[in-house]
Length: 274
Image (cartoon, rainbow, N blue to C red; front, side, top):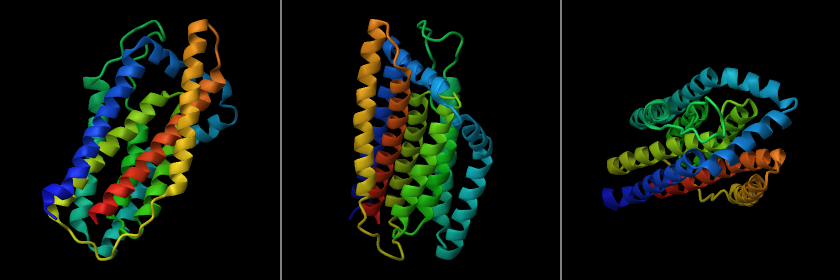
Protein backbone atom coordinates (compact mmCIF):
# COMPACT_ATOMS: atom_id res chain seq x y z
CA UNK A 1 0.00 0.00 0.00
CA UNK A 2 1.23 3.49 -0.84
CA UNK A 3 2.50 5.54 2.14
CA UNK A 4 -0.12 8.24 1.50
CA UNK A 5 -2.93 5.70 1.79
CA UNK A 6 -1.40 4.18 4.92
CA UNK A 7 -1.20 7.63 6.49
CA UNK A 8 -4.73 8.66 5.52
CA UNK A 9 -6.52 7.10 8.57
CA UNK A 10 -4.14 8.95 10.88
CA UNK A 11 -4.82 12.20 9.03
CA UNK A 12 -8.55 11.74 9.47
CA UNK A 13 -7.95 10.84 13.08
CA UNK A 14 -5.95 14.00 13.68
CA UNK A 15 -8.63 16.14 12.06
CA UNK A 16 -11.36 14.46 14.09
CA UNK A 17 -9.43 14.94 17.33
CA UNK A 18 -8.79 18.61 16.50
CA UNK A 19 -12.52 19.05 15.90
CA UNK A 20 -13.37 17.32 19.19
CA UNK A 21 -10.87 19.52 21.05
CA UNK A 22 -12.45 22.62 19.52
CA UNK A 23 -15.93 21.50 20.57
CA UNK A 24 -14.79 20.82 24.15
CA UNK A 25 -13.19 24.25 24.35
CA UNK A 26 -16.10 26.16 22.82
CA UNK A 27 -18.74 24.38 24.90
CA UNK A 28 -17.08 24.16 28.31
CA UNK A 29 -14.85 27.25 28.30
CA UNK A 30 -16.42 29.78 25.97
CA UNK A 31 -20.10 29.24 26.84
CA UNK A 32 -21.79 30.25 30.09
CA UNK A 33 -23.75 27.03 30.58
CA UNK A 34 -20.72 24.92 29.74
CA UNK A 35 -18.76 26.71 32.43
CA UNK A 36 -21.62 26.11 34.88
CA UNK A 37 -21.71 22.37 34.14
CA UNK A 38 -17.94 22.05 34.46
CA UNK A 39 -17.94 24.11 37.65
CA UNK A 40 -20.64 21.90 39.23
CA UNK A 41 -18.41 18.87 38.67
CA UNK A 42 -15.51 20.86 40.12
CA UNK A 43 -17.55 21.75 43.22
CA UNK A 44 -18.83 18.19 43.49
CA UNK A 45 -15.25 16.96 43.69
CA UNK A 46 -14.72 19.15 46.75
CA UNK A 47 -17.94 17.97 48.39
CA UNK A 48 -17.50 14.26 47.72
CA UNK A 49 -13.76 13.66 47.60
CA UNK A 50 -13.61 12.07 51.06
CA UNK A 51 -10.51 9.98 51.73
CA UNK A 52 -9.59 10.03 48.05
CA UNK A 53 -7.96 13.43 48.49
CA UNK A 54 -4.88 12.03 50.23
CA UNK A 55 -4.41 9.32 47.63
CA UNK A 56 -4.91 11.79 44.78
CA UNK A 57 -2.48 14.26 46.32
CA UNK A 58 0.25 11.63 46.72
CA UNK A 59 -0.33 10.32 43.20
CA UNK A 60 -0.16 13.78 41.63
CA UNK A 61 2.98 14.69 43.56
CA UNK A 62 4.71 11.62 42.14
CA UNK A 63 3.09 11.72 38.70
CA UNK A 64 5.45 13.95 36.64
CA UNK A 65 8.66 12.24 37.70
CA UNK A 66 7.12 8.77 37.85
CA UNK A 67 5.61 9.11 34.38
CA UNK A 68 8.85 10.22 32.78
CA UNK A 69 11.06 7.73 34.61
CA UNK A 70 8.73 4.73 34.26
CA UNK A 71 7.93 5.51 30.64
CA UNK A 72 11.59 6.03 29.77
CA UNK A 73 12.80 2.88 31.53
CA UNK A 74 10.13 0.64 29.98
CA UNK A 75 10.58 2.18 26.54
CA UNK A 76 14.37 1.87 26.59
CA UNK A 77 14.18 -1.76 27.70
CA UNK A 78 11.79 -2.49 24.83
CA UNK A 79 13.98 -0.59 22.36
CA UNK A 80 17.09 -2.47 23.44
CA UNK A 81 15.27 -5.74 22.81
CA UNK A 82 13.55 -4.78 19.57
CA UNK A 83 16.24 -2.33 18.31
CA UNK A 84 13.64 0.11 16.98
CA UNK A 85 15.50 3.33 17.79
CA UNK A 86 13.85 5.29 14.98
CA UNK A 87 10.40 4.49 16.36
CA UNK A 88 11.63 5.49 19.80
CA UNK A 89 12.83 8.85 18.46
CA UNK A 90 9.47 9.46 16.77
CA UNK A 91 7.63 8.49 19.97
CA UNK A 92 9.71 10.84 22.10
CA UNK A 93 9.19 13.60 19.54
CA UNK A 94 5.41 13.09 19.74
CA UNK A 95 5.52 13.15 23.55
CA UNK A 96 7.56 16.36 23.59
CA UNK A 97 5.26 17.93 21.02
CA UNK A 98 2.20 16.98 23.08
CA UNK A 99 3.54 18.49 26.29
CA UNK A 100 4.89 21.66 24.68
CA UNK A 101 1.68 22.27 22.76
CA UNK A 102 -0.35 21.64 25.93
CA UNK A 103 1.48 24.43 27.72
CA UNK A 104 1.30 26.77 24.73
CA UNK A 105 -2.43 26.19 24.30
CA UNK A 106 -3.13 26.73 27.99
CA UNK A 107 -1.01 29.82 28.60
CA UNK A 108 -0.50 31.50 25.22
CA UNK A 109 -3.34 30.58 22.86
CA UNK A 110 -6.56 29.84 24.73
CA UNK A 111 -8.35 32.08 27.21
CA UNK A 112 -11.21 31.67 29.66
CA UNK A 113 -13.75 34.49 29.44
CA UNK A 114 -15.28 35.76 32.68
CA UNK A 115 -18.97 34.83 32.65
CA UNK A 116 -19.71 35.13 36.36
CA UNK A 117 -19.33 31.41 37.01
CA UNK A 118 -15.95 31.53 38.70
CA UNK A 119 -13.99 34.56 39.81
CA UNK A 120 -10.34 35.18 39.06
CA UNK A 121 -9.55 31.72 37.66
CA UNK A 122 -7.32 31.67 34.60
CA UNK A 123 -7.65 29.19 31.76
CA UNK A 124 -6.68 25.68 32.83
CA UNK A 125 -7.45 23.76 29.61
CA UNK A 126 -5.79 21.43 28.66
CA UNK A 127 -4.49 19.60 31.75
CA UNK A 128 -0.70 19.35 31.84
CA UNK A 129 -0.63 16.47 34.32
CA UNK A 130 -2.96 14.45 32.14
CA UNK A 131 -0.82 15.18 29.09
CA UNK A 132 2.33 14.02 30.92
CA UNK A 133 0.71 10.72 31.91
CA UNK A 134 -0.83 10.14 28.48
CA UNK A 135 2.36 10.98 26.59
CA UNK A 136 4.40 8.58 28.74
CA UNK A 137 1.84 5.88 27.95
CA UNK A 138 2.04 6.82 24.26
CA UNK A 139 5.81 6.31 24.12
CA UNK A 140 5.50 2.81 25.58
CA UNK A 141 2.61 2.00 23.22
CA UNK A 142 4.54 3.10 20.12
CA UNK A 143 7.76 1.21 20.87
CA UNK A 144 5.94 -1.94 21.99
CA UNK A 145 5.68 -4.90 19.68
CA UNK A 146 2.38 -4.91 17.75
CA UNK A 147 1.60 -8.16 19.56
CA UNK A 148 1.61 -6.37 22.92
CA UNK A 149 0.16 -3.02 21.91
CA UNK A 150 -3.38 -3.91 23.07
CA UNK A 151 -1.99 -4.55 26.56
CA UNK A 152 -0.03 -1.30 26.42
CA UNK A 153 -3.17 0.54 25.31
CA UNK A 154 -5.21 -0.80 28.23
CA UNK A 155 -2.54 -0.13 30.87
CA UNK A 156 -1.78 3.30 29.42
CA UNK A 157 -5.46 4.24 29.36
CA UNK A 158 -5.97 3.19 32.98
CA UNK A 159 -2.89 5.14 34.06
CA UNK A 160 -3.99 8.25 32.15
CA UNK A 161 -7.55 8.05 33.50
CA UNK A 162 -6.22 7.71 37.04
CA UNK A 163 -4.04 10.77 36.54
CA UNK A 164 -6.84 12.83 35.05
CA UNK A 165 -9.41 11.81 37.65
CA UNK A 166 -6.91 12.62 40.40
CA UNK A 167 -6.57 16.19 39.14
CA UNK A 168 -10.36 16.51 39.43
CA UNK A 169 -10.42 15.02 42.94
CA UNK A 170 -7.61 17.36 43.95
CA UNK A 171 -9.46 20.27 42.26
CA UNK A 172 -6.56 21.14 40.05
CA UNK A 173 -8.58 20.69 36.88
CA UNK A 174 -12.13 20.44 35.58
CA UNK A 175 -13.31 17.44 33.54
CA UNK A 176 -13.02 19.35 30.27
CA UNK A 177 -9.37 20.14 31.05
CA UNK A 178 -8.59 16.45 31.50
CA UNK A 179 -10.36 15.37 28.31
CA UNK A 180 -8.65 18.14 26.36
CA UNK A 181 -5.26 16.95 27.65
CA UNK A 182 -6.03 13.45 26.39
CA UNK A 183 -7.06 14.83 23.01
CA UNK A 184 -3.82 16.77 22.61
CA UNK A 185 -1.77 13.61 23.14
CA UNK A 186 -4.09 11.65 20.84
CA UNK A 187 -3.52 14.28 18.13
CA UNK A 188 0.25 13.81 18.38
CA UNK A 189 -0.21 10.05 18.34
CA UNK A 190 -1.86 10.50 14.94
CA UNK A 191 1.02 12.71 13.80
CA UNK A 192 3.45 9.98 14.83
CA UNK A 193 1.31 7.47 12.94
CA UNK A 194 1.52 9.54 9.76
CA UNK A 195 5.31 9.67 10.07
CA UNK A 196 5.57 5.92 10.68
CA UNK A 197 3.24 5.22 7.76
CA UNK A 198 5.54 7.21 5.50
CA UNK A 199 8.58 5.24 6.65
CA UNK A 200 6.92 1.90 5.82
CA UNK A 201 8.56 0.13 8.75
CA UNK A 202 7.73 -3.53 9.00
CA UNK A 203 7.31 -5.08 12.45
CA UNK A 204 9.18 -8.23 13.40
CA UNK A 205 5.93 -9.90 14.45
CA UNK A 206 2.31 -9.48 13.34
CA UNK A 207 -0.32 -7.65 15.41
CA UNK A 208 -2.96 -9.54 17.32
CA UNK A 209 -6.61 -9.11 16.41
CA UNK A 210 -7.68 -7.83 19.84
CA UNK A 211 -10.35 -5.15 19.54
CA UNK A 212 -10.59 -4.39 23.25
CA UNK A 213 -14.36 -4.94 23.42
CA UNK A 214 -14.49 -4.71 27.25
CA UNK A 215 -13.10 -1.18 26.99
CA UNK A 216 -15.66 -0.34 24.34
CA UNK A 217 -18.57 -1.45 26.54
CA UNK A 218 -17.20 0.35 29.59
CA UNK A 219 -16.71 3.49 27.51
CA UNK A 220 -20.24 3.30 26.12
CA UNK A 221 -21.77 2.83 29.59
CA UNK A 222 -19.72 5.75 30.91
CA UNK A 223 -20.78 7.86 27.94
CA UNK A 224 -24.43 7.21 28.74
CA UNK A 225 -23.77 8.13 32.36
CA UNK A 226 -21.86 11.27 31.40
CA UNK A 227 -24.56 12.45 28.98
CA UNK A 228 -27.28 11.77 31.55
CA UNK A 229 -25.33 13.68 34.18
CA UNK A 230 -24.79 16.57 31.77
CA UNK A 231 -28.51 16.83 31.05
CA UNK A 232 -29.45 16.65 34.74
CA UNK A 233 -26.85 19.28 35.60
CA UNK A 234 -27.99 21.49 32.73
CA UNK A 235 -31.67 21.48 33.66
CA UNK A 236 -31.01 21.72 37.40
CA UNK A 237 -28.77 24.74 36.82
CA UNK A 238 -31.56 26.44 34.90
CA UNK A 239 -33.99 25.81 37.76
CA UNK A 240 -31.53 26.94 40.41
CA UNK A 241 -31.03 23.47 41.94
CA UNK A 242 -27.69 21.77 42.53
CA UNK A 243 -26.84 18.13 42.05
CA UNK A 244 -23.15 18.21 42.80
CA UNK A 245 -22.65 14.47 43.15
CA UNK A 246 -24.34 13.80 39.81
CA UNK A 247 -22.17 16.45 38.14
CA UNK A 248 -19.03 15.04 39.77
CA UNK A 249 -19.87 11.44 38.86
CA UNK A 250 -20.67 12.55 35.32
CA UNK A 251 -17.32 14.29 35.03
CA UNK A 252 -15.47 11.16 36.12
CA UNK A 253 -17.56 9.06 33.74
CA UNK A 254 -16.69 11.39 30.87
CA UNK A 255 -12.97 11.09 31.69
CA UNK A 256 -13.19 7.27 31.74
CA UNK A 257 -15.17 7.19 28.49
CA UNK A 258 -12.72 9.49 26.69
CA UNK A 259 -9.66 7.60 27.91
CA UNK A 260 -10.94 4.17 26.91
CA UNK A 261 -12.39 5.28 23.56
CA UNK A 262 -9.12 6.92 22.56
CA UNK A 263 -7.24 3.77 23.57
CA UNK A 264 -9.52 1.59 21.46
CA UNK A 265 -9.34 3.84 18.41
CA UNK A 266 -5.58 4.26 18.72
CA UNK A 267 -5.06 0.51 18.99
CA UNK A 268 -7.24 -0.02 15.90
CA UNK A 269 -5.38 2.59 13.84
CA UNK A 270 -1.96 1.19 14.67
CA UNK A 271 -3.10 -2.40 14.08
CA UNK A 272 -3.92 -1.37 10.52
CA UNK A 273 -0.55 0.32 10.19
CA UNK A 274 1.34 -2.82 11.23
